Image 1 (cartoon, rainbow, N blue to C red):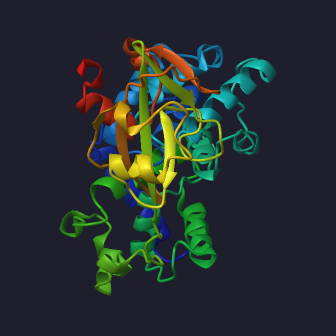
Image 2: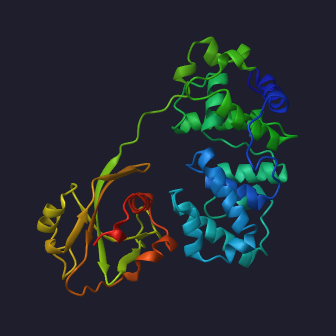
Image 3: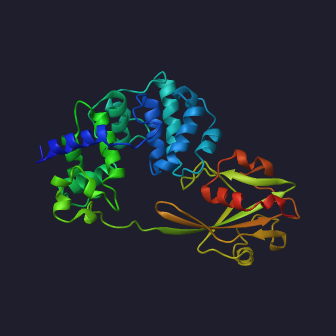
Amino acid sequence: MPENSLFFTKTLLKWNRESNTRMMPWKAEKDPYKIWLSEIILQQTRVEQGMAYYQRFILKYPTIRALAMANDTDVFKLWEGLGYYARCRNMLFTARFLYNNKKAVFPSRYEDILALKGIGTYTAAAIASFAFNLAYPVIDGNVTRVISRFFGVGEYVDLAIGKNIINNLAHKTIDKKSPGKYNQAIMDFGATVCKPVGPLCNQCPLSGKCLALMDNRVAQLPRKRGKIRIRDRYFHFLVIIQKDQIFIRERIARDIWQHLHEFVLIENGKLLSAKSFFSKCSNSIPTGISYSDLIYSSGEYKQQLSHQCIHARFILVKPKKEVKLDGFLTIPIGSLHRYAFPRIITKWLAENPFYSLP
């Protein structure tokens, strides 16, 4: 085993017993369904935000069967605001698979857990260790940071060689008798002590043997290659109101926000004013709608995704001629709250009571 690995493991477990005050509703949970649900919700989500969603999901869908039998629209509406909606689709798929093929029972072997749709090595390890006491280490950003700093891992942790080193160290240091407690300890330690910025090195029980601290490299570790290139996209949402009805549709293409709803969307190379929009995008605007139908045009709205930045403008029209659109629903304006929309649309809806305009 690596030098000081036994000290590392014992110290983390001792800290967990005596000093870990981080409270979360799923800690000490043994139900694999609830553990799975919490882990799916927390992917790409801050714990503070995820807690409320977890509690609402558990209340409405307390079992695999309840989730498997749920209506898609209801589940996506409950998920609304969490983003990364592929997680929600995979969650529904897996719940229904378990209900239809496994009698709504979660598998207890790591390999079988990992084979479920939407579950990667991190989530599989969390379920295996927390629910079934199997010695599989969870490896997330917190764990990577703690291991990288303590053992002085200088390789890039987002490249294969660095990932392999972290993975090997995680497997060698996990406590075989209490893997769940160890996994929770190292994650909480990274979140509260060995933090990305402003780590509490003067309070850290590992500091005496931490190689990063000894070499004055705490701020430099873990090493990563650099920032992801962000793609800008420019959306013009044409909000069409006709006889107190509004046009919406479900996004079914393999793109962002799949299975969420939207208004008529016309994408362009840059964000246009309403006047320019009607002039330059005339071939894409539905037949029967013109600039004279304009009621309101919003300012710019932005939503940052992991690899994209969405810039949007909402253009509200009330056509004088009857409009028919294939693939769209026409619903009462008062029913909008029943459908799940991307965050950028829900923000606009909350800030602009457009239904009160003439």
